[in-house]
Image: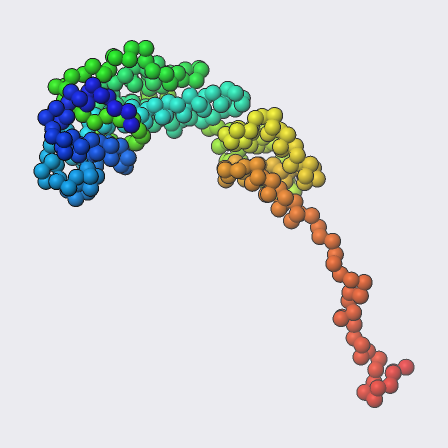
Amino acid sequence: MPMDVRRLLASETWVLGTGDERAAAMCLWLESWHQVPAASLPDHPRMLAHLAQCTKWQKVGAHALRGWMKCSDGRLYHPVVAEKALEAWVEKLLNYISGAAGNAKRWAVEINTATQRLQLVHAVDMLRNLAPASRTLKKKAVIAIASGSPPDSPPDSGRDSSPDSALDSSPESSADRKGQGQGQGQGFIHSAPIGAGAVGAAIAPMSPLEQAALMPQRKEGEPLTEEQEKLLWSGCRYLLAEQGVSPDAAGTFIGRLIKDVGGDRALVFDVMRDACIEKPLGVRAWMRAACKQRHAGATPKKSTASTHAGFDDLNYQHGVQEDGTLAL
């Protein structure tokens, strides 16, 4: 959890606090970073004393809680810690979107980041309301996605060229500018509604994986069309790419599966459809096991009956009279 040292040492909480009060305040800032929602604390004296690692809570509690405010969910929030948590959440989403764009270009697949883009637009909206001068809001990639015009290339998640543009606020700019850090989290209470244009820009068409998962189940004995095979292949390649399998390796893998089941393409493509629905973590091992199991069930078993089969059905009393003689 990096600290904005200049901002911290100039805050009233630090300047006016005793050693015990500073230690308690620092512990609360650090603990709030790992709470859910991030940047929040429970509004309970005993819990606060425990989180502050303080045996003299009644004496230091009032000063240690400077700047904290109770919100509608009943928890305490600090605006500066919330600002840093939002910045970290935006960075995390930006890194995910950037990585997904790079993987999509590398493996020639489509990766749907609509959910992450929508979350980023929402987080940027909250951060803009809380800290309009935040340096995170000045990044080109953030501006592009939040404004509804995502870049063609992977977003640049690097820092803005003017590092001091947003961190020169004085301690007097708020009631108490203190705890800082970097982490993850959501759950902040107050935010303005997201604009309709931003929401529309964050919604992308269905990925090949989602399209393949929606394909109807093939009926027994019904052949697959070329279009169905193409759709299932695209979805399965997308799923394999998400787990680090290149297109060439994916083609080799599917070809080996078809060979292992005696050339039954329909069986393999049924397994590919189910894999697109289930999305197993070890997709290749899962598909191998599924193909093997279904192929074994579809192969007629050899008869295990002996050459003496049917003797139990014979009537050995046929033609024998009651006195034991044979009826001629």
